[in-house]
Picture 1: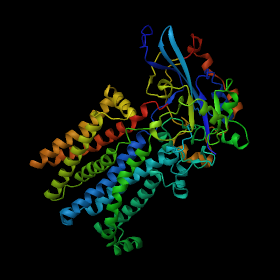
Picture 2: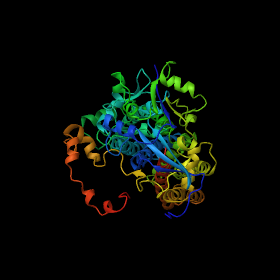
Picture 3: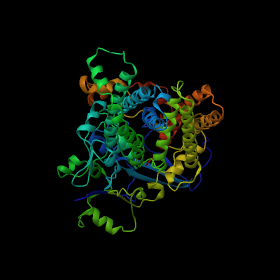
Picture 4: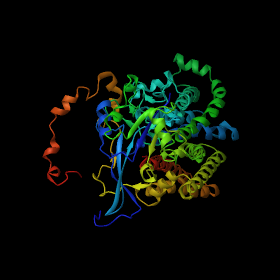
Length: 316
Length: 257
């Protein structure tokens, strides 16, 4: 810093203040949102595929869909818990719920959703592998109730939508961070789920019919295209809120977040879109798997950037 | 009854007496503040001026922190104070994300959210908040804003047209007013934090939130088996060896980097 230089006469400068908090919601919350997108996304995309194709065309979908969902929902729940400074008090959300809080409503919905997905997973696994735990009493009971899967599934799909989007309501309630409070965030959450839901299923779709795989490619291409367009609008268009302008000006000026944002856009959106469009003409499974992996990485980076940048401006 | 605060910035001289009184009264841990006084300079030498702005919780009538708290740890008292029940707080930091005024911190000792409560415990006993008592120029004015005969109501009436709140566009309806404030003093985006121009430097961001030694594992074990710093008392801090006294930096002029 050049101490000889002067500051403009109109510019006010803070000369004494306390240290400001840095990133408060960091990588654990990013991971939480990313994992939840996968957990709900595979259900939404799976439901769409099941409505358009026969089950025989996607032989492993019945158990693979709840398995992927179950794994990532548990990652989501685990990191939700780990991010708390008093994790053992998580039970207070159920004992002393405050219903104006989207955190409370979301926790209840996500817990119910995870419970139903667990039931679907148990039925799906025991049906798909009839010799697995054949003599086990619990397995027998689950196999007897196999039809529950189809009965529960519509409720799970219905619940997947608010579970996907409630984080946007939390963001909107975090009124100090105006960048998050954009209405577009609701739709971004939905597109994020479709992006990583289709990307995850692409990685396990080797034995599926070509038509089913083509649908997956289409979902990936459309979701990354729409989500990318919305990010560009949010990134470049002028906002009325002064704090959003300040946040974006901070990122526009360069630095690590600028690099991270464009890396996310390239990996998560531009590359998968180009590969998916190419694969719609001539299918290339290897490249589609590559696109699926870059989508998963890109979404994590995009979420991380968007989560952290509004926390960098001083609030008082 | 609706308790409110008013700070006359024309009177405040930046002595930080209120800040210290708050720290002592509420045993606010190191690296945390319920109330702080910010210095802002404007102009070029020799035509410069310095303003002082005490900043604390605004006790909003429509408090975003109360709304987002998943367990009602943040709640309204009948007198309008937005209070914290630290025994219920889960430490999600949602309130820190919601408060437009950056008034909430994660207590590094209890690992729960905390903030100014207008000294609710003192109010209950019929006393004034510690910062009000400590102010040598009576720049802090506290009382019932719904009682037209109260000191604060009369002060507001006397200064009509010169009363401000922070970020009115947020529609939080703060119950914390300023007299003599302006864009520079009340809008955090109107001034810059330039490294090298502050009285202290390289302290712009805290590296950790809450207790830096509170590992993820300890978050689970501490409530059952006790934390690593449970044995510490105020006397422990007095007895601690202060290695900083022996560092090279402390011998340099100013001693702050």
